[in-house]
Image (tube, rainbow over all chains, first blue to last red; front, side, top):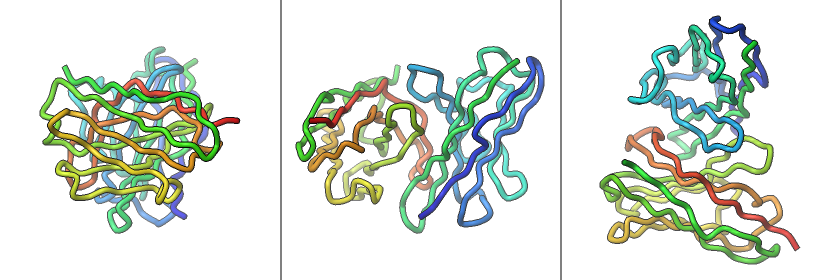
Length: 111
Length: 120
C-alpha cells in the first residue's frame, strides 16, 4: 500500500517562513509525481495552490511556492499571514498504477 | 466562471445505492478529465475515481473498485458516480474536481461537496 506522509502539524510565527513536506513510501518524489498542494479551511472545500510540483494557479498568492527538496515535494510559505492558518494536503500521482494518493494533511497554526 | 456543483447525496442504508452528479459550467467540459475525491468526517482527502475526456479511461481506488462506477455525459456537461453496495466507511463529503493536465492529473477547481451518509 502506497503511503504519502506529511507533518501532522506545524506552527509558524506571523510573518515567518515555514516549509511543509510530502514524502512517498515508494522513495524519492520527482517531477513525475506531479505533486499538488491544496489548502483547506474548516467547512470549506479544498483550494488548489500548487500543481506539477512548482507551478502556481492564477489565484495562488506569491508567498506560496512549491519545490522538490531532499527527495520530497515541499510547500514553502514566506511571510505567513493569519489567513494561512489551515490544513494543507499534498497529492502525488503514481502513473504506473494510475492512481493518486493524498497525504494525511498538515495542520498549520499561525502564532 | 468555472463552477462545479454536486448533487444526489443523502442518507442511505448499508448495502444500498446512491448516484452522485456533478454539473459543470463556465468551461469546455469535454476538454477536461474529471475526478471524485471524498473526505470522511474529520479525516483527510481520499482520491476515489477519475475519468478521461472521452470516457475511454476510468480509474478507481482499490477501496471502491467494483462498487462504484464513474461516468460522464459531455452533451450535458455532467459527471456521475454510481455508488453500490455502500458501507458505513463510505460516509463522507464527496467532491468533484477538474483535472487540468492529461498526464499527472493536476487539479484546479473543486466543487463545494455533497454529504453521503451510510447508516442504518
